Image 1 (cartoon, rainbow, N blue to C red):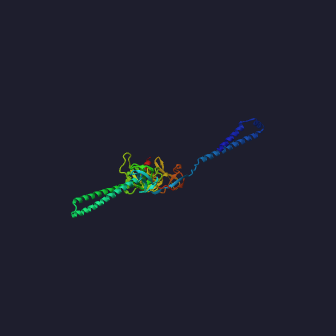
Image 2 (tube, rainbow, N blue to C red):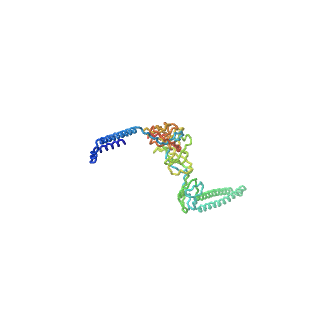
Image 3 (cartoon, helix red, strand yellow):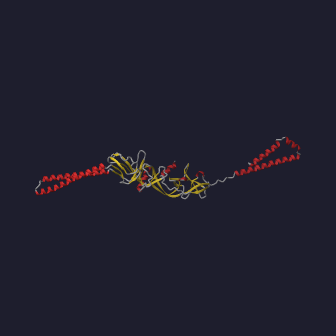
Length: 427
């Protein structure tokens, strides 16, 4: 390009010298001897030839450099080695947390609410006193029943004494058998009366005990629904709801296609269950599958599962939506890579493998369960091979790379069932 520019300048100079005469040039030409004019023309022609040669050389140099292949710099990527692991297989379904026990505390007698001895949201133990209803009326009824019992007991004691005397008189012939039988009947009647009085005392004592309402379970109180001074009515006034949070249940629905694998796992022994947050990013608790419902819902083809969790950290709350994962099997000694290494092409999944020559190789793979940031490779990758986990968008087969080794910090979380991964490949 430089040579062509100089050549153009030379031609322009000559053209201006020969084609654009003016008065001054004409006067100079008339005064200039013929020999000097010839020498000037020779100088101009030499300048033109020099410019032409320089331009041709520059053009040839440019063509030679443009035909030389340019070196492609190595592509920076992150790689991770495929590993051998035991992979648990889980099936999952959306579930709801349910309290282990729920009790609505109500009064069993009518009366004025005198005392409230709990705070809203307080943890209570079984037998803790919660509220007190005015006990005076019930105490009076109990005292009256006790007094009536004492009265009838005294009459019974006297009747038994009289019966003993009649027994002696009949033996000696001083009393008739009829008098003895009448007294015996009187004793029996009084015994029945005393027994009735004792029952009345027990009933009155029970009614009095109902004025002190105690917690029937270990749990946590909710919002108080009645205040001090209100009249509560038997089996009509709710005072507070207590829920037992430790342990706690999760009830979830599972597709009927996964039912057989769950039943097989139950026959083999205890089945692990994991409660995950609804978005699947956080593991809330680990528990045990408790039961599988005894029928499938024909409307949607699902079956209910119930799992029990210790809930020590209280991450599970009644009414909360969670994902319940149930372990059905464990795949032993399988090849695992970070799920970020997987790429999808027109023929399915593939990964970029970095060989010892630090060049990228596109390798088709058969993928098993995927989950928790990890993927099982059923075919295509051997343990120890390095796969690209980041930077694939700049890669092509055969390109050199600058590899940065990364070690995955994601533990092998519950993976979906193999059928789910196969469905993903088809998609």
